Image (tube, rainbow, N blue to C red; front, side, top):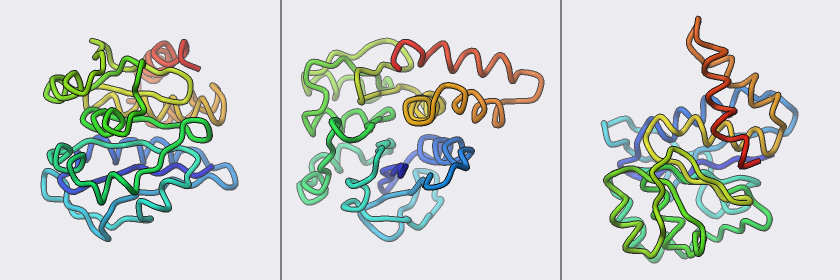
Length: 198
């Protein structure tokens, strides 16, 4: 199982890196999590520079793709050279988006007739794209999920794990990263939010 996290310039660290950390709790053979970007290096909205693992073409071959958010998402969706590379297919991939990443899915035509979640800043842009925006942290239909709010990245990671490895694997991953003294509370919250979308 290969999961690509699309990470663009001015990315939100909480979206890409929390998902990366939680998803890497899975240690089964063949499980791989990659940061994918259009350039060899990308700088976060707070000045952190990271190197990609794979390019966008390789990401489109992954079994699951998570589209992170950032401060330049409207520039990304206006860049035809980037958007034409994003050949995502929910018939063969799990596809998820976080905050302004939801705008990417909307512009790719992947959210037609599917309501979506996003952050408060991106909501008007996603609505302009003709998508019904929900006032909740996570929504999924079939193989497509969206989340709103930076910390909601944990919901997307949990959803991807549960869809691909099962609910017990998702519980174990969240239990590992949850705060001490609150582990059961966190596991229950994560599972409650994703259970109806599995």
